[in-house]
Image 1 (spheres, rainbow, N blue to C red):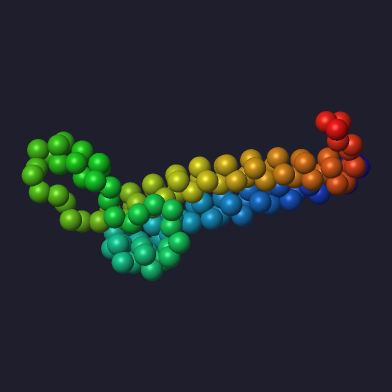
Image 2 (image 1 turned 120 degrees about the horizontal axis):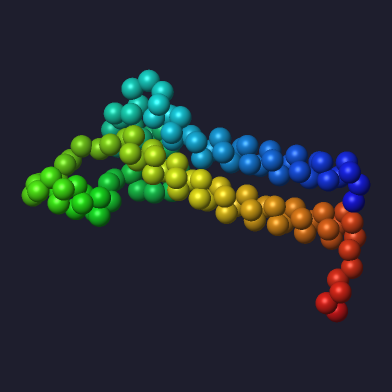
Length: 122
């Protein structure tokens, strides 16, 4: 493998990280713009048709909130900022796993195809 091939492979891998970071930061950037922090669940669904976590609050969070407030009624208000933060965290976990997998694939591709290493397991 030449130096040029190494730098091209590294550049491709870092570009994948940049594209993934833009995707992962999408909900946080959206919630900070304008008055989106107080958006309704329908507005969030419209802005993010593909999302990794459910738009509604989780039952565990509702229970914890009721226990902290000693309130028997659930709060029907949707917190878009909290949802965006949880979605961003979930996307970053997925980004990290996919980016590392792409790094292993790129390493295999450069080693097998570009350098032409032999398989010593046979």
